[in-house]
Image (cartoon, rainbow, N blue to C red; front, side):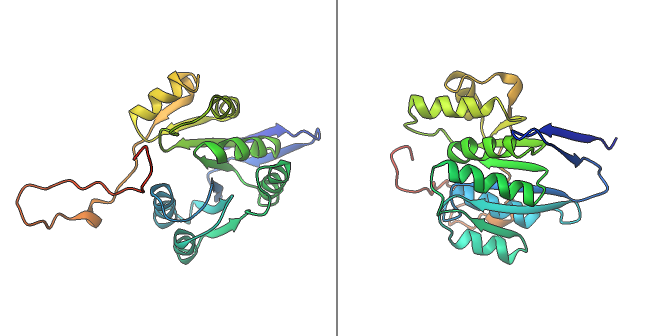
Length: 214
């Protein structure tokens, strides 16, 4: 049933967001950037396949934009870039103001850096639901980075991983409890990848950026 969700902000005020199913939910996706990458392609698919009668999507990039941002805009969703604020308290303020001004119902951050900045800003801004997706292994993450991920993880409703391996790392390296972690594999449209090779048995080709973990 419809219900009101309220959260006290740091200023002592209380924000109320209606969870009624008869209105459009405002969802904000926060990522480092919107340039070429697998995570960025998934965000484009979010824009392509979402139901506009139920959800209004806003995409926020903490760094530069690229072709994925253009595709998201072409699909009718708004894209906002915040590259001028850097990794400072100004970024907290910019995100908090954005979430409050747009009356965002759900903040969905992607990977570690947006998780830390986006989660605290969303919690501080009174956003009712906060979700993070861990898309990979965060290769070479320092103890400080893991600590920030765990700390922000205490203020989210759910950490979603795209594989069982990523879920295992959340439990073993990020010190999160199994109650906070769920696994949802990346969705792929099989009609985009019809096999048309020279032999009957399909061959597998891996395509990735040139980095150590790949």
